[in-house]
Length: 380
Image (cartoon, rainbow, N blue to C red; front, side, top):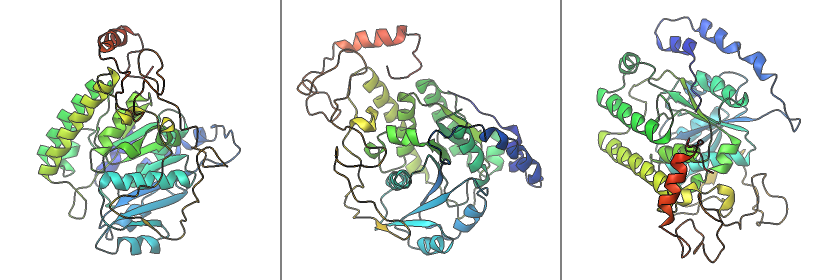
């Protein structure tokens, strides 16, 4: 895990501070970016995605705060809003994708990332269009990806307790965040300041590796994604990001928070059960080992794709030239410990334990894992 601190960004949280000094600090990173090799001869492409629901009043402010020159395209997925979210976004030049009805926060993110990959994004930054997170930090978060320092960058809302509470975070939410983040840091071997931030940036490799289509359609999608990132050995870091709590900013109620917290603890249990081969979970098999990803056909109906976006024609697996994420999809995933299994031993080949699963090996697997010098929760 790589821990990132950028003290100059915290100045943006204090009212009345001259933002020019912050911008000056951010510009100091620019010369470093010119040293990044472009192996394929093209400029790396960054796409900002916005999972939106009833955000017509705040989209423009969020968009205007994105640093010029850091984002090549903005994609907004409207999750069945009852207001003019899609109309306002289109008027601002944003690529808009409309879902027929609300499918949940996780389902919205799935659509965001699928379309970002289809549009050749090398880096993806998720910004909530409700203006809660300071989108001026988007450029610096992506810069850490470009420099190869991190594969995943989160925006930490909690640099200090006083700043979080003075910024409007409810005391009960702050306490729950501290407890749950501490548990996750210990369980996953990380040192993050805020596991539950909605400000996130990913490299393309992360999104191509993690089978996020297997994740929940609800808020626990985020917890599952970070556990998967740890499992696959990706480097996770964070930067302080100013936040705002006001009427238009989205916030989940107490009861949903309790459900989310219990779901997150369930994710940690699933993480360890899979690593110790007690239960096989498809969420911890690489996406390239699964069936080709496609746009989900669920009870929500088919998303409506607005101009200028067009869905590319599907390419059958193993034929023609598909997207650059396509690969052989017929491999049986190897177990984390022990010998490779055959198709017959693997059972139904959907990530669950088949006839070849041997519970007795879990103890030996746990001992080998604990004795390993590489026991940083990375898959072998």
